[in-house]
Amino acid sequence: MATKLSVDMSSGGRKALGFCTPKDDKTPQVMHVLPKRVVPILFLPGIMGSNLRMNAERQQRLNKSNNVAWRPDKLNEVTEFLEASPVRRQLQLDPQATEVDCYDGGLAPTGNTHENAGQRQDHSKVRVALRFEIDSPLLSDDPPSVTPRRTKEEKARERGWGEILFNSYRHILEQCEQHLNRHGPDSYWKRIIGHNPAEWGAVANPAITPLTEEEFKAATKDCLFPVHAMGYNWLQSNEDSARIVSRRIKNLILDYQRSGFACEKVIVISHSMGGLLARALIHPDMGNINDKILGIVHGVMPALGAPAAYRRMRCGFEEGKMGMNPAPKFLGNFGNEVTAVLGNAPGGLQLLPNCAYGNGWLEIRRNGLLVDQFPKNGDPYEEIYCLRNRWFGLLREEWLNPAGSQSAGIARTTRLLREARQFHLDLVDTFHEQSYAHYGADAARPSWDRIVWNLNDTNVDPAWVDYRITNDSRQGKLALAGKTIKGTPINGVSAELGPSQGAGDQTVPLRSSDRQLLSNRFKAIFRQTGYEHQASFSNDDALHSTMFSIIKIAATMKWGSHA
Image 1 (cartoon, rainbow, N blue to C red):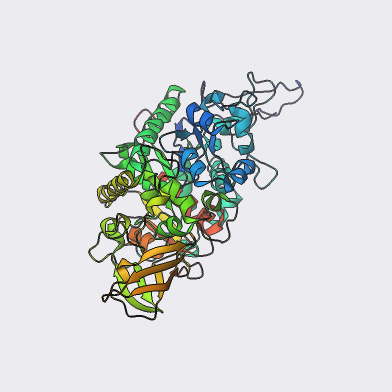
Image 2 (tube, one colour; image 1 turned 90 degrees about the vertical axis):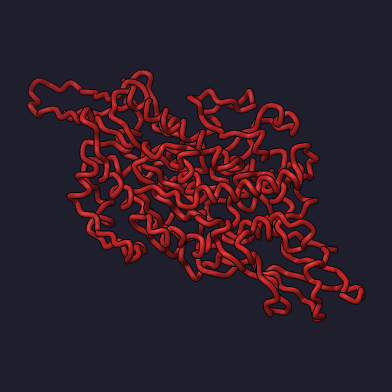
């Protein structure tokens, strides 16, 4: 009888379990011994994709029954948050009072005596019946005879799967775990091996050749690819997150080494903001672990930022198909709700278009005719974001600090904006030498390539720049007033933010994503269509290009003499 293989990679390394057979059964037993080599696959989610908890003081102040700050998989939490005031939003999503809601071996605090960490993360179990049959030797239920017996759900939680927005990211986690840890290429790989990468949107230059079965076998031979997720506090600066995640990656590698495996590097898959974090991880003055990362697959990264961030801070999150992720709309339906959070969040401010995005993306039009454009001198931080008393600027100062915090306000936010500018200047040419990317280039999914304010103003008033806001719908409609040069009062002027335009994925425009293509630093670029930003990893083209890229990266691994 063939053996049943049980694995606990976190304590004790490789194990095999055999069964006795009758003496007259001469069938040889077969024992599959796990490979010694391990290359962990590490997934980094996008903004709002990591679960957060608040400290005890903040929980008490908000009179919450638990310490959940952000956990969008729990609909009761986000539904309650939908009705939250800007004061509540600022206090609950405070980067200085929150941290990643990780599992911590089941010992993580929940702020609720009736709930432990395992119960909180139970929704993040591997739901085998829904779509995938997880049949990985690394992530399967232990046989009943193993003590202590651990389920695949418990093992997944130890890997960080409960730290992130599972409903959005489960496809990439499960597919990697399922299909990278089989003996030889299974039927899934027939969709990838031998196929022209152009089928999934690969551009002609840089040229990339199809994956062969020989390449696949050589890249995966005698190697395991356990899939981990690492959440991060997306409210905080990606530079700070890089230092924290860097330590976690080094400890992860050490854990595998202590368990008897040869483990030297990880492969990183990122989504959206996670791409900025991944690049910060390899920057020598931030995460400084380029030598621990074999390669990076960037998914829908806003390489130069996205004007949608400006739009949302002024007008709230737009309507649209949210797919499996209700998170964006819950973060704020109105501009003041979003500004109360992102206006105080270094990470959120790092998603605004940076200097390299270029000039002229903020347009002022009068009855459809172009009047002016900003920025003019390549610095949106000074020309748009830090402007005071300008109706078209980023910040409504009265929206910044509804909670009356001593550490919040216009002075702090302008400082954070200038720090965001420096972060991008430091990161501008930082790309891993084994980088792959996929992103939306869909003309049918307009993506705020630029922001247009249209003035309904019949007067030719050169002083339009000094108009003041007399009424703000907080969703993109303004009533303005001012004076002409001769001092005659001007009333009844309105301004409205125009619709989204420009190819992309409904959030990140091609103008930002194509920075990766134009950098000439990537091994392959996949320009794709057919998905919305948050749901990208539910799209087959995105998944296939990711799996293809992982194998191409894995093929570059050079093991030490003792591996």
